[in-house]
Amino acid sequence: MDVLDIARWQFGITTVYHFLMVPLTLGLGLMVAIMQTRWVRTGDEKFLRMTKFWGKVYLINFIVGVATGLVQEFQFGMAWSEYSRFVGDVFGAPLAMEGLLAFFVESTFLGIWIFGWGRLRKGLHLAALWCAVIGSWISAFFIIVANSWMQHPVGVELGDDGRPVMTDVWAVLTNNTALAAYTHTILGALVVAGMFLLGISWYHLWRRRHDGIDTVDDAGNVVVGEAQGVPGRDRTDHGVWIWSLRVGAIVAIAGFLGTVVTGDIQGKLMYEQQPMKMAAAEAACHTGSSFSVLSLGDPGSTDCSDVVTLIEIPGVLGFLGTGEWGADMPGITDLEPQYVDQYGATIPDNELYGIHAGAEVNYVPVMWVTYWGFRLMIGLGGIVALGGVVALWLTRRGTVPRSPWIMRLALLGIVAPFAANIAGWIFTELGRQPFVVAPNPDPTGVDGVFMFTAAAVSPGVTAGEMLFSVITLTLVYGIMLVIEGYLMVKYIRGGVAASMPELAAGGGHGDDPDGDEKRDDVLAFAY
Image 1: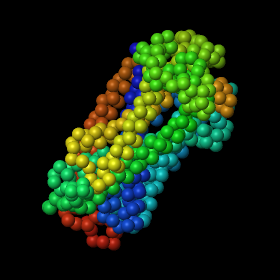
Image 2 (image 1 turned 180 degrees about the horizontal axis):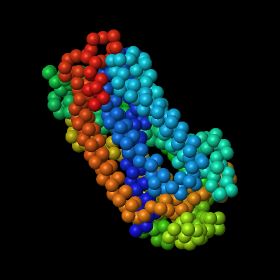
Image 3 (image 1 turned 120 degrees about the horizontal axis):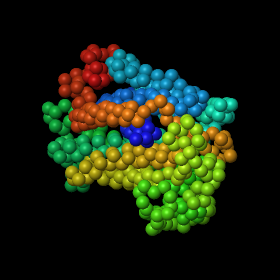
Image 4 (image 1 turned 135 degrees about the vertical axis):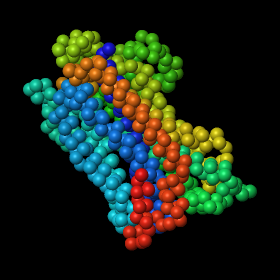
C-alpha cells in the first residue's frame, strides 16, 4: 500500500468532516448575533427565544468543529512534514495569526457570551457575541489565505535551498485568489445557515399545524393559537419560527446570488492560474469555446480518449473564462504538452520522492471528480435558491402547508448547501493534482515555486502507521458524528423550551443582571 495514497485519504476524510461544521459556524453565528441585536434593540421576547435556541445549536456545532479542526494542523507535521518544511516560511505567518489572534478572540469572547447571560449588561453581552463572530470570520480568512497561496503562490522568492521565503506578507494577504475564495466561502456559509434556519423552522411550524395549535381561516391566513400548559408552545413561539424561516429563505437566496458572482471571478482566475483544473472541470478536451452541459466517459479517466460530449452550448466557455463570448479557451490536449515542457514528463529522480521517483507525471486530474464536483456545486446551489423562493411564496400567509412531504423536503433541503460546499472544496483541492503547491503560468505569480504531492509526505512514516492513523481517526470522528447528531436532534426537536428551561419553570430569562432571576440558568443554556 502506498503511504502517499493513505495520507491523502486521511487528510481528505478529516478535512471534509471538519468542513461540515465550518460553514454552519460562520453563517449561523452571524444570524444569532443579528437575532440578539434585535432583542437588545426592541426587547421583543421572540428574538430572545430565537437567540437562545439557535445559539444552543451554534454552540454544539462550534465545539465539535474545534475538536475536529485541531487534527488538521497536527497532520501537517506528522503526515506531511516535507510539505511543512517547504511552505513553513510562508504558512507560519497566516497560521500564527489565525491561532494566536483570531481563534483566541473567537473562543474567549464566545466563552464570555456563554457564561455572561444574567451577569453582563445587555450591550456588553451582545458585544461579546459580535467579537466571537468577527473572530471566526477573521480565522477563516487566514486559513483561506494559506490555502490560496498553495493555489497561487505570491509574495515570495526562492531561497538557496529551493524553498520559498516570504518577502511580502501584504502580497500574501491580498492574494487575488484568497480574496475571491474568502468571499465565496463566506457567502456559501450564509447559504448553509439560511437553509438550516428554513428547514428546521418549517418542521416546527408544521408540528404546530399538525398538533392543531395553528389553523388557517377561509382566506388561508394563519390563525395563531396556543397549547395550554405546554412550555414554549404559545403565540410567541409561532413568531420565532416564521421569522426564522423567512429570514433564512432570504439569506439563502441572497447568498446564492453572491456565490454566482464570486464563483465567476474565481473561474476566470482559475483559467489564468490553473488552466488544467478548469479545462478538466469543463471536460474541455480540445481548444474551443463550447460549454459542456453533459459529457460522459470512464469514471476513472485522466485523459480525453473516451470522453464524449453529448450536450454543449457554443460560446459560453469563452465567456466564463475571459468575459468575452466565443473566446477560445485552451483544452486538455493542448495544455498537457505545455505542462510537460515546463515541469517535466517524470517526477524528479530524487530520494525525496521515494517510490514515486522517476514515475511518469499525469497532469490531468481525475476528470469525473472535477467535472461533476463543479456541476454539483452549482446545481445544488441553484436548488437551494429555488427552494428559498418557493418557501417565501408558500409561507406568505403566515404558516406552512400541512403536507408532511413538503416538510420532509424542507428538512432534506438542509443537506443541499452542505453538499454543495463539500463538492466545491473537493473540486478545488483534487483539481490541482499532481501538485500540492500549484505552479504559476500567470505572470503575476512567482516562477519556479511549486511542489509535487508525491514529495510532500513525511519520509519516515510507514504504510502501517498511516493505515492505523486513518482507521483510528475515522472511527473517532464517526463517534463524534453520532454524538453531535444526537445532541442536534435532541435540542432541535425540543424547540425553544429545550434551550430555555426557565420557560418550563415559569421564571425569568436570566437576561437582566440587576434582576432576581436564578443565576444557574446560564449553566442550563451552556450544557
